[in-house]
Image 1 (cartoon, rainbow, N blue to C red):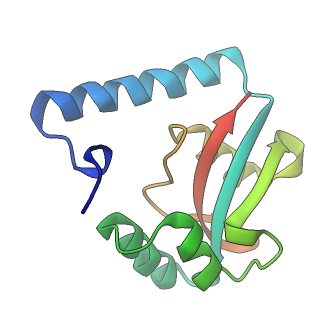
Image 2 (cartoon, rainbow, N blue to C red; image 1 turned 60 degrees about the horizontal axis):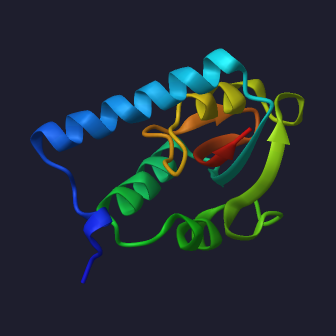
Length: 125
């Protein structure tokens, strides 16, 4: 059984939610984000990252569970990196995270010097 919030939104509701998410991202960028609380799943291969996105998008596994099972970064439990400032993260990672609404993850893998990330933004300040 799924909770109502997990059901895909249709039509106008989906468009309104997407517009709200985009507006929140734009507002965050404009005011300047000092810190973000982020999680990630890190893998070496692009194909593996795409497989993980498929798992996440299907709803078969939660982000935290997927991170525990698949991420090669074992430093953060459940993929949690915690609160990070811009200078504490790879700039490609930071830039990609800025585009993601809070509570969501990147729709495509993000490549950095460490490999391929799927980044989830928990919060910003």
